[in-house]
Image (cartoon, rainbow, N blue to C red; front, side, top):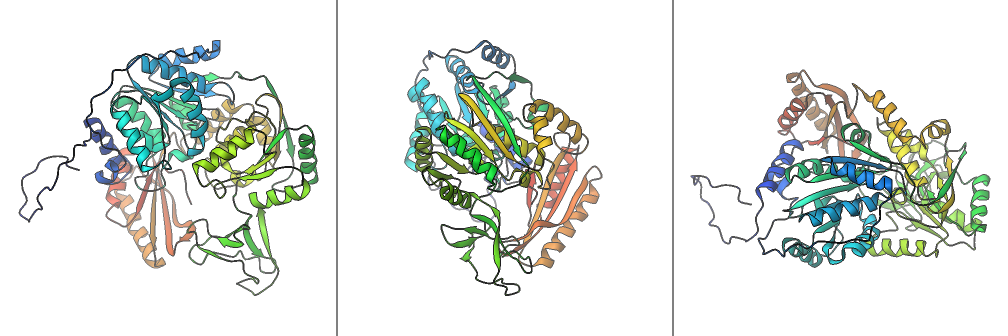
Length: 570
């Protein structure tokens, strides 16, 4: 990538072999420069996110007419959006946020601009594609990592020629060759999937603010459970009506994660009513850990300091950090005891137990082990919506805004696992998941949410009052955590434990030069070793983002990974 002309250096240079026709716009270069400076990566790494632009002759844009009728409340939401540069559309599940997006897109297209819709995961694209195509036809293109190289080239060409004017996709769609974007929508804005876990460690939701500003485009953030940061920092419209007539009952069981008689009885009742059921668990695999009854030791990965997960389909233990796989041991590796048991129930075991209890029901799994391709996802959702599946057992994928019409019962198991994670956002994450899962039942008619938890008082207080929760949560975080403070995480990983520790000690000395920074935590990471490397973390916070970034750039001389605005602390 050629950025500018310079004087020829003294050392020998290769001649330019070929000049391509693609280029980056000045706006792209400005955004890439921000990414490199804010997210602590090279300019080359930042530009590597973007797709270069071919200069092509564009087709003249045409007006679009839609048969989309908005309710009075939805119309007020659209009016609010039109009078603000950025808006948080805080809309309950089933309140019709998508219809508001579509109407805003129509106005954008009729103003001669294009629109971008970001979604957190590939899993949401099939149903959104269907809805957008039904309104906008060939003007819509879908973009995510699983589409073929040929399909990507075709999409880019149609964007550049003006044939495609609405792009719906995952976070990478933000880096397509946009030139006349007038609207950016970030759906399910609370979702952690917008954050990249590898360098550049950008957050697409946060970058959308900058991209919208650079293009003078409107920005809509949408969610039934918005993040506390967006709620505080973005003008919001509360869309609290329900699109479908429905009523919902909340039932609590004083249990953590078990297939109890009460739970079986509840499932039987809804199967008799020919209603579908979704069962949510926060973990994948069969059981999370294998442990010895005698010494209590988990079977650990030899390369990572974490317990290995039992995958019954593979009849093996798998490390979810480095993917190391081994046979299930017959005896405890630590003490030789033959009495080893599985702990913490998971999706595969729940499916097995439910099939034993309800042999006439069609029960299937819905997690990342099962859904490995876009076609598998599309097929599974179609079969569920066609009532070919009675019970769907899955992980966080179940909460991703899928539209299920005949679900009568949503079951939430193991939610206390998320609540007990040592993270300042654990309450927000857990409550958000419960509300999202609850939104899968009773979309049309009566529904029930069955929650196993030791913390029913917390959920019952907030499950129908998420706005109150956000206000109280913000009061708790003031002067301590985002959005009031900025955080930076520094990670050191090395094959030698003492070397990793020494590097982190050197980095900590740098903090003395920045008196406005506070070291919140420092030492071995929660997961001490991954893939044979020992890990040390340091977490810093401050009101002074400039000082945090100066420190981060000065720490780059060491072999470190730096995460600005981190969402994970393990």
